[in-house]
Image (cartoon, rainbow over all chains, first blue to last red; front, side, top):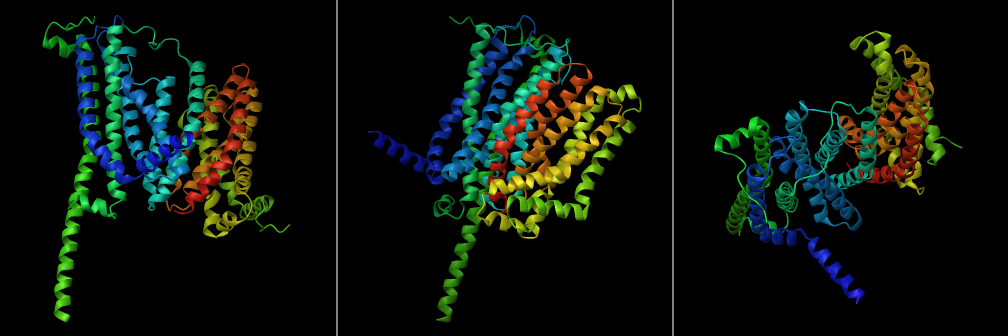
Length: 251
Length: 75
Length: 226
């Protein structure tokens, strides 16, 4: 029985590993995913902006939380998505994994940028300043640099195969280092923690605030999947343009 | 049961966000802008790629056709 | 043993011999280190009390930049003269040969910088308690820089203009070293316990020593294709 399961997984793996299969299958999913993610994001935004109760301490400025938190979470998960795809590509030599990895980099960088930006806009009414050298912000900034490194490396090579492998290695090295970087930044922050600025911890979030937040988180997850698929499909076209099925698309 | 009521008295109140409107709306505005760019950039790229491909295909077909005529002429 | 053979000691010997004969391999990073540190009092303030506050951080930042500067050549020169291909094709395990290159790089940049640091500390009026953690921290920290940097240098070895890219790729990975290194000196100056911080730096060094050469070897096999 185990062997048949293994065989099934292997078969699925190889089918999924084919760019053509990926392109055709995701093509069917895209409209649904687009509708679901836009629907959830619009619903969550209206709910969060208009109907969630005001925060006792921060007033209305806290409403940025509904975009800031999901984006920050995805920015971090995105790096692991990228590195996991890179690992799969290196170990099993699956073409499509490379393309997913390369597509996850600019998406992750954009989300990290947004996380920093919304955070700093939120910081102004909350702490009176756009930028604080807080542990979480600093870690986010370093994450942004890590993404930029992968993007820059990807663009530097003329040979696509080399670029893929190089990016996979770099993102794996980055993944191993991320926990260490985060811990060290955390520790650094406790050393220098200024007494005047106190971040609002995740003390207690009102359930009426939590519900729209969950809707937004789900919406952003779908959006992430959607854009990752779109980017990967573009990458497939750019790399597989010689193959007959891609030529067939334009006829 | 979710108690749902609009938290603001008027539309102007909603936009002002009790003084924090600038921050909230810029944050949401820039986010929407970036998300739109993220979603449409690959679509535009794909479209451009396919149109270039189509042109190349046409050029190739023309080449092949003209070659065939040449072949016929030499024979 | 002839210094041109491709054993670990052979690579090490050859690299160091070339560096000694040319001189610039040792001198340039060191000069960069000294000159950049000289900029600090000119840019900030010559007042000893102010300099003493920023001295630990400034010395660590300039040391980081100086090692970064020399990183580009760690494999590139060997690629140019063809010996890198021989190293990769040799039957010896690549990671140990890469380790030899890393040790050579550290002996050429990290060690001179570490030895020069107390002098710069004095010039920046670093208080007396700071010197022991500064030197031990830099010795271990620059070794971490060489180990991590080798991965980036290997990835970008065949690129024409890899220098800036290399710094961009490698620098985020340097943050923990800088944090632990600079704060051990700061803590010593403030009269706090600094040994646990140095121990963390040591732990990080052990970790990079155990993983870095393998990553760099894999990176070299990829990077050589350009």
